[in-house]
Length: 363
Ligand SMILES: [Zn+2]
Image 1 (tube, helix red, strand yellow):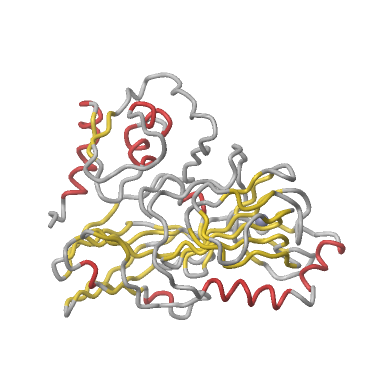
Image 2 (tube, rainbow, N blue to C red):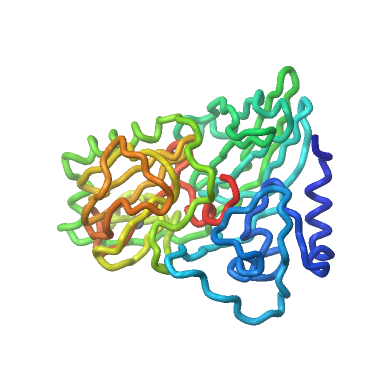
């Protein structure tokens, strides 16, 4: 349906396209990626095209603002802050198997969520596995994944477990045809942080209720429901809070085990509204010893978002929520030493850097 080289050729041609002032949206593009390649801000790109949000469509023609133009207009009131990923997305490799065009990233880092994109009329019949997960400390390793999507454009989500630095391998089957490949992974190079928490906080790690808490969350990770979202993910706070410490290796008490920090911490005042990062169904809403006031949303396609330490919860289990809907208030409940939102975005139960999700076209 599409020539394998189409994307690579377009990426190469973008500098030319930038000079010409327009760009046609390709599968896999996001506002952030297009803006980065054109050397402009996401806000400037949005303003130049009168885009109310982050949604763009394949085939849409975007005006590219002049890279040298000073200060783009600010975002409209109430719009979420656009938080770019820490590093621009790596180039995409394009291959074919059984009549299906496959697009994969060419490099990954620990804790990154990524997309294998499958295009063509037979793409819905493909099965994708990640055999490198066998033997790793990862939930549901090497699961046979069926793509989600529609109209010949399908996706499967991958995740790189924190601590991993060996390549991710993939195996894609369409009928009798099989494509195998691997993607190199770099680590996060963070030094272990020793928190030395005071006993009144660290005692929550040995709370008798912790096992039940972990079991409830693990059960949520096992859900496999259809993709519930159609728009990009957005930050959970409307303030421009700066997130920190994703993937940070930590000890909580002197001499304790090294554990990864599976989420992003957003310092904010108690009572700040917490909003859903995308559409989904609330599968947990309660107060727990470690995570405190916790909401877990199932977004389908194996994706869950978790919001810790809230002072008040405004949703109930089973409730459907939409992107941007308020679900609770920031607090400092559970294992926390000050008001903040701890946000996690997990793929089949494994933690990924939420900043990689914002501004993506799909997922
Ligand atoms: Zn945290």
